[in-house]
Amino acid sequence: MSRVVVAGGAGFLGSHLCDHLIARGDHVVCLDDLSTGSRDNVAHLLGHEHFSLTVTDVSEKVELEDGDTVDVVCNLASPASPPDYLARPFDTLAAGSEGTRRLVELARAHEARFLMASTSEVYGDPEVHPQVETYRGNVDPVGPRSVYDEAKRFSESLTMAMHRTHGVNVGIARIFNTYGPRLSPGDGRVVSNFIVQALRGEPLTVYGDGSQTRSFCYVDDEIAGLVALLDSSLTGPVNIGNPDERTMLELAQVVLEVSGSVSELTYGPLPADDPTRRCPDITLARAELGWSPTTDLRDGIARTLEYFASMVMPS
Ligand code: UDP
Image 1 (tube, protein in one colour):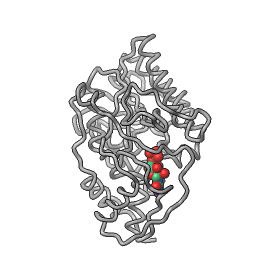
Image 2 (cartoon, helix red, strand yellow; image 1 turned 45 degrees about the vertical axis):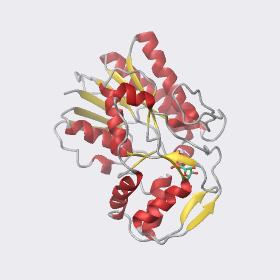
Image 3 (cartoon, protein in one colour; image 1 turned 180 degrees about the horizontal axis):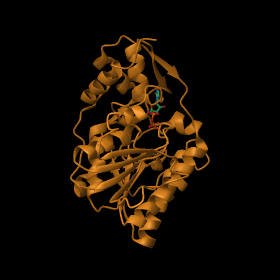
Image 4 (cartoon, helix red, strand yellow; image 1 turned 120 degrees about the horizontal axis):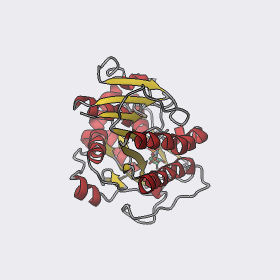
């Protein structure tokens, strides 16, 4: 049994991580400013004797109750959907810099392990495919997405500096596109958009010509990978994602087939800086963590559809 701080614990990934840790008997201290996360995501955990939620912006304040010990600090606190981080550029930069600094300092003070949730976005629009951890990336440092990409690159740099200089026990995960229940219906990511549109019988909005690729990992698989890293002593960075690469047109087709929707496709402009392809090389995760994803895209989409069907009303 460990005491784990989960920053961003009321977000999509964070809340699933809290569930997993509580289920195995850990104590969870969830920190979240509820800006893109939601109390609803952890409502079922409130009142659990091993769970607490503190509403705080970790880029301004990280404070625990006096005397609390901490074994692990997980940093998942950041806007993560492109529309969210583009709408909050300064909050995103602050989360990656000041937020990460406060959290890694907390880990240092408690001699705790620090898990940094980084991202495939550190690879930018990749020229190496699939992306292996040693690839240094192709990020435009002044492009609109740089507020997220560079914030995460800075987080990785800061995490490694704390490891090298102060011996903090760290693990860096590079998370690729993840989907599943608790994605917010309005957050603008492709899986939630397509599913909500299919359920409402509205056209699916394909940006560009739909030939760009992503590799989608079901949330339970992603959490299993993060927990394997948390429980290990691997420093990383390590890619945690599903190498099942799809074009956005293929994804649209899967959503239509699984939902049985008769929605059509509509095409819109490709957002600035949108990476053309993305696929993790997970050799390192397989070898060092014994982890690989097991959920097939159709099964994962079916489970996600079920979740959205219970909350999405026809417009
Ligand atoms: N996308 C799309 N339709 C949408 C939302 C997104 O075609 O309604 C595309 C987007 O341009 C990108 C891919 O889907 O190429 C994944 O976008 P998302 O925002 O989910 O995540 P990203 O990997 O870009 O951070």
